[in-house]
Image (cartoon, rainbow, N blue to C red; front, side, top):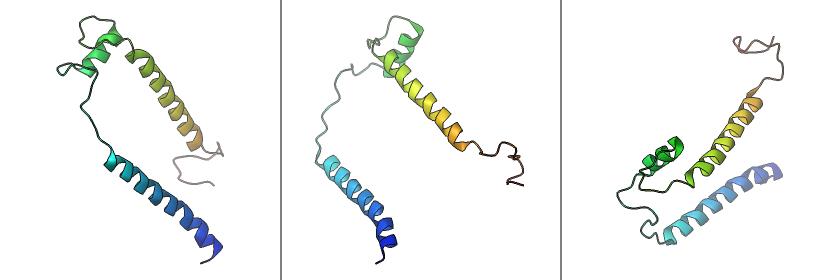
Length: 101
């Protein structure tokens, strides 16, 4: 086996080993009954009531809004980053032509 093949094989083996480790941890875990919210409460309705500033939700939603805003900022940053990465280096090339001239 050459050094080039070994370098290509190592990340694959690491990924398989990580998958096996996560599968073993998941299979050995004991999941209990969910706690924290009433059984008949709707989390979606609680988030909606909190965002609109309304009362009447069975779930206190004071903690939903800051988490929602942090997730919003992370997703916007990911969107901007993906647009920057997808940008062409040559701005004069026509994207509809399918190639550089």
